[in-house]
Image (cartoon, rainbow, N blue to C red):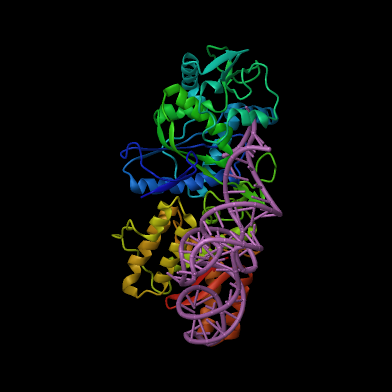
Length: 461
RNA sequence: GGCGCGGUGGCAGAGUGGUUAUGCAGCGGACUGCAACUCCGUGUACGCCGGUUCGAUUCCGACCCGCGCCUCCA
């Protein structure tokens, strides 16, 4: 039984898909005007775990994650670089794909682009106007929040409260200060599309609703994203989706917590962000992924060097278990992770990844001290459990030998092998002084040696 | 002002009305030529004050502290 925390109800609800034969999941993707930071990566990794779990539970899961490739921030970025919008968004879309692949995230079933769905958005806006939920004003089309009685139900606020805390100027073309833009006019030098309301471009929220309608249906099971999207983005999506199609739009809303730097929220506007691309220069993607999964997805996560080093150490110990000591152990190919396995039950409880990782360590400990005959099944168990989390996919030997961030002066593998060979000869000759000298030399270069029954093994880092 | 979240051992981070979280780091031991890895053992904990209870870190209330959202933001 899968339970998920639903922002709409404020509690953990039992997940029951509308159609068990086709579960639908939509996650808000990036606006591609820059490289993504680690905060953008958190929902990608978290919902990747959810996707893997759902795929285990249901025969078909349709997972869509959009690319926002039309937005005023993009227009501004183009003005800065002099690139065309297509060139700029294409460049950062490709970078996003690379970065997320490095984090071990599976490709979603569908990756829709906003600019491919302008027609769908226009159609949806026309529907909203026809139903009296939207109106045209000075070239803009706005959603009339007062036309929706329960507007504010996701973020738990009402229109009066929002007016009390209003801190922005109210545009004079709005009937109500809370009305939001569905379509806005473009200047001649701005990108735009022809519409019944003149040449213009879509507002921020309409793309997700239109793409959900196009690809997933009038009602979807799960919609995810960062907590900062609850209001206004998701609140407004609900307004559009519910009012246009007369449905509940989304049945389970899930929101991940922020990533903090020094206890403060990381965001593009504060300028304290860490780009995934930069972090990958110093840490394997799996270390970043592990760090992101080391705490519960709804908790804030303080991002630091210490966190990453601990993630690396924990991951090392799991890979050591896979590596084994002495004889190579082959994972049992017939093993299947049981439904009541601790890793599975932890994830079924609102994606408790921290507990799932703890369960992984328990399996690793059993594997380490198992009799040889029991090792293949335990190794398969560890790999299968980790697979649900998208971890331990690398070859253990390669994991240790390719690690980044080792010694100052990197040695190539052939040199290391030659030194290891020389040391083994010295050991045979009982020349331990020379043997230790070589070991220290390698250690200073970031290479750790390990003598096993099968010979000497070396690892970087 | 409105709404919401959190304070757990050196660090990270789960969880529970009474019994080991887990990992990293530390300490002792086994293994090893010495190490590393692994194994065995071990210490340190639940913000503050009340209440409920045989018993609360876990439930309830107040308080202190930190954080987030209130139309840029994952």
